[in-house]
Length: 374
Image (tube, rainbow, N blue to C red; front, top):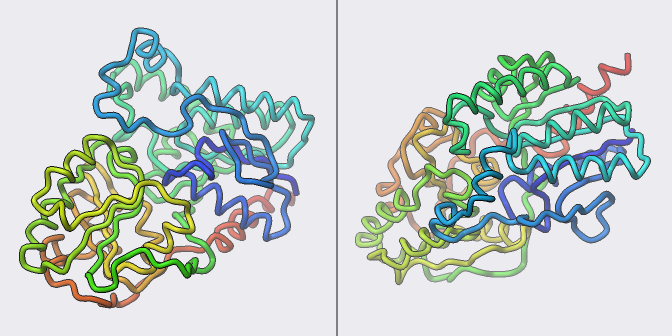
């Protein structure tokens, strides 16, 4: 079976959204399927189409959206369902012009414009269409434009006309699935975030062996504009005074304001910024850590997706911030300051439920697809 996967985020670009389509594509190939990926950039020898995007990586400059010009304002407010619609449709047209005739087209959001393109490409090529949702569309939207009534009404019409056309809609959790159903999705299935089949190993040592290392992997405000780095910095400062062996490592892309917050922290001498690293190195940091930290915001109903990766290891997890996600059974019950202050070198967490693996996710998806062959 031939599958075309449309993704806005895909390696070698580094973002939390790149991992899900990447792992899925490789797991589907492992299961014997031909998968062609269309994304702004592709790893070496990845079959598919690398369609240039002028803004592949998110801007980190503080206040950059305030400095936008009139053309940029028009782009943000006029292009529906989001400014990526131009790239999404250009990518879909390039795929269609190549002459491929896939059995399935998979589009994965955000951005939701990929679903517009996915539906168009499926109709153009005679394929079935699967729409994969990693996040809510209109409930608690990240994009500020979607807070406007006229925008919400208009995008609701787009979603309600679009999702009934999908053969399958997959969603990361029940809340996202219920929103898709309200938009008319007829065959909505839950596919939680998944992990590599085996926890990646790395022989490279990154962290100081004589310190108790707390690692936060991934972005913060770039992934969730409501999340605040201070929700981790402040309890770390309190814990560091009690436990001076603590070291906090941020691995991933931070905004300028987040880096400024670290520089202004009372514990700055115990904090290191590693910046963006390749995915295999990110897993190396996770494996070496004495604790793994994440920050949840007040608007999130589940913890950040990085918790799925964290659960691959028996390392303690530190949860910072407050919100409905605190009710998730995967979330530690202790507050961040208490967890950090009591942390010891080589501490272990009692392992609970692990996340689904990529091969399990691919097997489940193929089973759903096979229902349309009967």
